[in-house]
Length: 240
Image (tube, rainbow, N blue to C red; front, side, top):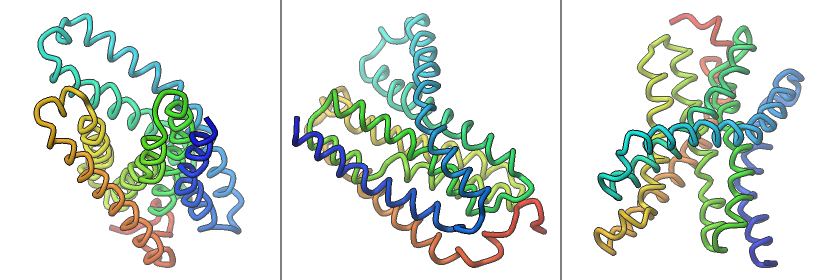
């Protein structure tokens, strides 16, 4: 138990570091600071919404009888729809509400921060749940690879770009890209998928590597553009 507690604490380090980094981007902006704290709380509470949405989707899938056709198909549905879609959708809705409430002042980087901070809040609860239901290695891997915070950064990048360009295709990417990456990770761990061939376990390591690389790529991107007007000026004032 003690080892798992230590693992849980360590697993929170990347997400905590990202939260304080994003919060510190605008230290003198009181509204931004309040939004960061509020969104962290909304991320924690989003676990309730995720449970409700995923439960309804699972029920609908069961009522159609599709769960009896193929164990592999059911596993894919659970990973991409019940888990990935439900979680990313609820996180998006929570963050987007704050974006809309602050649409007169919110910037491209603000959108990235807000989307990721909601994901960090959800990550806190999900990691705690895994603490009670899985092993030390999985607790560490899920935390250190910062899946949810990375999905949030990716979502925020495309949603911010959508706000800047006015092109709907980026909003579609803002939801579909995190859902796909998230779903591939979960599916790569599914017993039904690995049962096809033991070597397929390496698939999930590839997805983890992509996620880690994407996490640092997004951080480097923020550091590079954090003083550029294109990314820091309110989206409502951008001329496209």
